[in-house]
Structures are given as structure tokens and as C-alpha cells.
Image 1 (cartoon, rainbow, N blue to C red):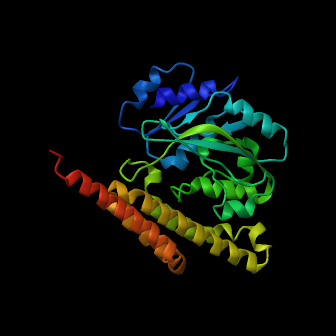
Image 2: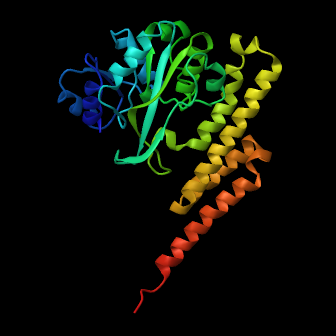
Image 3: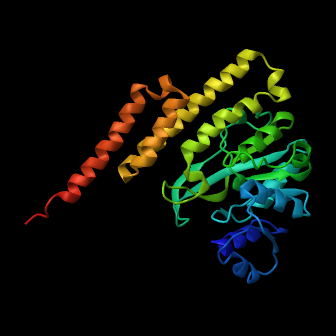
Length: 301
């Protein structure tokens, strides 16, 4: 997928510096990169994880603005120029985020989009509460602001990007635009993507939120505001986990569905155990059983 990803990055802007970080891969990444002209190739001898790879690419970059693109995602044509113009028009903003075209494992769009539904400006509390859809492939960041708050935290894999957006939003405004800027390869329970481990990442986010609520901006707020942030986040996460469990049940992903709903119950027991969630789960199970009955029925004479 890497050549297609690099090609999309080049087509996304008029002047794009492409840095490919090879995080100690054991496959043919190095060979593929040797065939890609016009890129800066950085090879790490020891695996640093996604956060470490992003930090390496960030430090190797020469531009004043940085965008991150996972190798199984795509940038849309002209999207970097669009976001750069938005960010330059708001000199105090730390980053700009756009909409996301959701795709299947073959990068074929599903017809669904995810957008950052919030007003531009101060988005600190929305980000802390996981209330803004932000993925690295949809964001362009002012590099000087990244250095103000520090690099990605390697100790929190899977949520290091959320931690970064919160730290940036603590002291700087953000620009949010709903126009799609990238294509995101949506994970499945068996795809092996880091984002496939939804339950584990959500539990990690709940634990890590206490650190975000210890930032000076949060500590300066009334205790009731911090309590509301915890409550809102737990409910939002429980909703997400329950919905994903019900979505995957008809596809036979029992282990994923069970672990996701168990995580929802652990995070917010009363909220996850609402009748609405059980009805959705039962509908998913009923769909699966009905499809199995159809497949098991003998063909008509």
C-alpha cells in the first residue's frame, strides 16, 4: 500500500516533502522505498512504535507544517493546500482537522464519512472528552506548536495522537473543517491494525484521561467541570464500544463483540447496561442467527 500512499501525499499539495519512516520492518519496505524517487527514507534499527516513528519523521522534516499519514490511508488531491490555507488564515491555531472518508480493507469508500463536529476555536474540553473526531491522517499541525508541547508519548500506544491533540488544544485554538481530506482504512476485528484493539485502547484512554485533567488548564476549571468530563467520556466510550459490538456480531466476530461490550460494562456499568444497548446487541445476534438459518436451509427443488 505504501506506493499508493506516497502518491496520494504528493498529489495533496503543491510543495510536499515526503518522509517515510521504516520502523525496523522485517518485510520488503526498504526495497519498495528504493524504488520510490523523491522521498526521504529513514530506517529505524529498533522498533519505536507508531509514536516513535512519528517523532522521527517530525524531527527529520524541514517544513513549518507537518501532516501524518499512515501507510494504509490516503490523502485526497489538494487537501494539504486546502488545510494549509485554513491554518495560515488563523496564525494562533495549532492545527487544522478535516473530514474523513471511511473505506473498507481494500480502500474502497463505504459511502460513510466522519467529520469533526465542533466549532473552530477553543476545543480543549471537547478533545479531552473524545468529542471531536480526529485521526492523524486528517490533521495538519504547525510544527512550532508541536515543539511547544513536546513530542508524541511512546508510553501510551494507540492513544498517543489523542494525547497530543489535547495538549495542543490546551493553550491554542484549532481550525475544524468538515470537508474530507483523507481516506481511512477502517479496521476490522481480524485486520491486525493497531486500531483493531478498540476495547484495550478505550480502557487506556479512560485511565490516561486523569493525566489530561491534571493539565494546568483543567486544574484551573471548577471540579464540577472535570467531573463532567469524566462522566461524558465514560458514557461516550460505552456507547462506542456497545455500538461496535452490535455492528460486528452479525459478521461472526464473537470475541471482539464480547470484549468490547465487557469493556463498556467495566467503564460505565449503568450506562452500558441500558435497555437500548441490549436491544441493539440482540438485534445484531438475531441478524447473525437469521443469516445462518438461511445458509443452512436446503435449496428449493
